[in-house]
Length: 246
Image 1 (cartoon, helix red, strand yellow):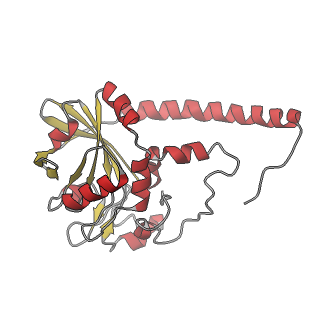
Image 2 (cartoon, rainbow, N blue to C red; image 1 turned 60 degrees about the vertical axis):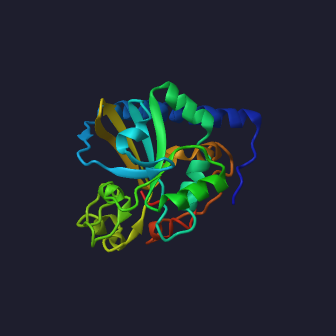
Image 3 (spheres, rainbow, N blue to C red; image 1 turned 90 degrees about the vertical axis):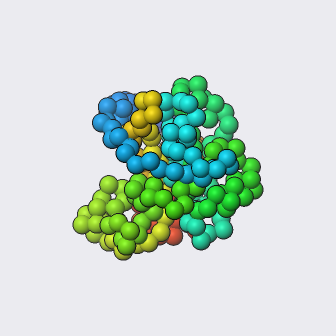
């Protein structure tokens, strides 16, 4: 990997000032985008989804733990796998108890949901030393309805807000007939017992949980990955690095 050019302190300072101006423009653009994200309309969750946790069956409202907001990681863990997706594992590793405490202080809970049976999730969670709530959606429509489990025999495939007809034009024709798991993150808002889906992100949008990557982005060597967008990258996401098709 190429290293930066060596220059004088004065030359470095000039280059850094030029980059700072671009960073400020980007920060302001991100602030505007975040405000627009908060103004997104929301959709009422009509189905009575059920999940399995350490205390048995629970409803989606129970995942809020009495708070008004819920951030949910759609953790890739196919029922046939013995271990979770490496990329999703990396995201979960970055989620500290301190982060969850900060979320809770702002009336927001975090949970993960996977399609694998709960005993597999519990064993993997214990082996990783994680403490966040993790629930199984095994046997329900939840993963399919939120487009993180794909199977055209269940419902026409859709991913990252592209339906079956749009996937080929985006260079993702392989997803049309794909069967398997994909990553995603959803946000929900509660009003009493009513639940609303306010936001979802897929593909590289899940990097919002990859704090280590954000830190690496400020280093000279960056993420240290030579990555192109090969056909079928998402299909191997559970054995590949955590970089996804946009």
